[in-house]
Length: 145
Image 1 (spheres, rainbow, N blue to C red):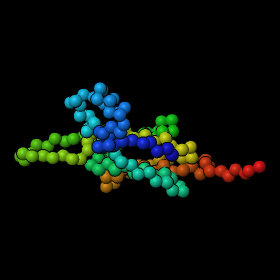
Image 2: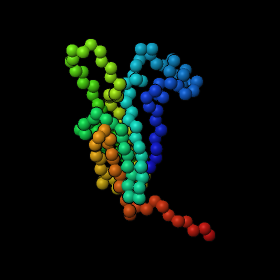
Image 3: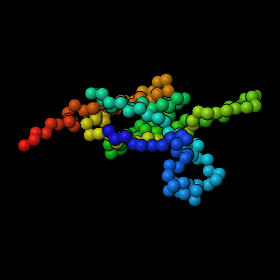
Image 4: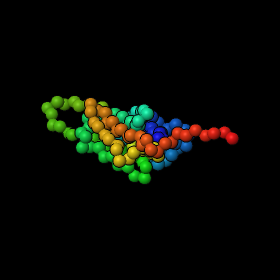
């Protein structure tokens, strides 16, 4: 399984080199706040003898908000949490949780069973279990001649 590097939250807001700084200076609008609106959930990747597991930290979602699909051996997980504007008699409101849509992609190794992938959502964690296929052995011993 390959790990895809991403930048989230505050780290994606600050350029890491001079090229990124100049790129943002000339191409980003001063009034563009889309960087603050991006939502990228953090993911734990685990491996056992029988499976790979992806644990997405996505509190406040409903399980109907997720879409999982496999396209050309790439697992694509997406979802959306919409902001619900509630009418209230209170005059001050601070919202620090993340809203919006996200998409994460993972290239799957050849030794997985795509037909038996399962997903469960409980207590704010989306757990995707990708079982390994016993018949597709990836590890081999090579004899030196």
